[in-house]
View 1 (cartoon, rainbow, N blue to C red):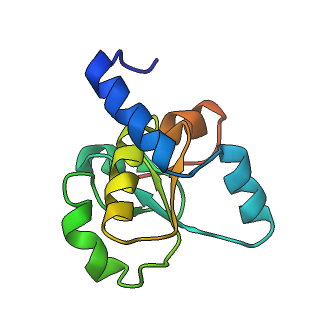
View 2: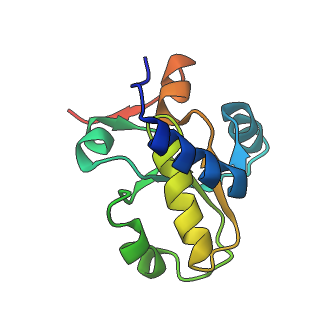
Length: 126
């Protein structure tokens, strides 16, 4: 179950979501089936990513993504699909990347939890 968030945090995220394109798990799966594999960026904390993550995802935590994104993805038109635990942190991070000039940023609606709840594969580390 998703944690209860404060009203101000919910408002902040709603404002970000209004500006940031989102895709669903189904959208992502359709694209994958068609051979289109966008770059997945997990913005969760280090420990969350280390435990498990979506196959093919790279990690760039929300705390450092603005600092590190230009080295990893210098082209501002690079398509990046950001995800977090439930779609909040990814929307906030995506909004910041858009403010930095990135033009092809998408937030995965429902994030990791939606993926896991569907029983889709995760990469785990022993």
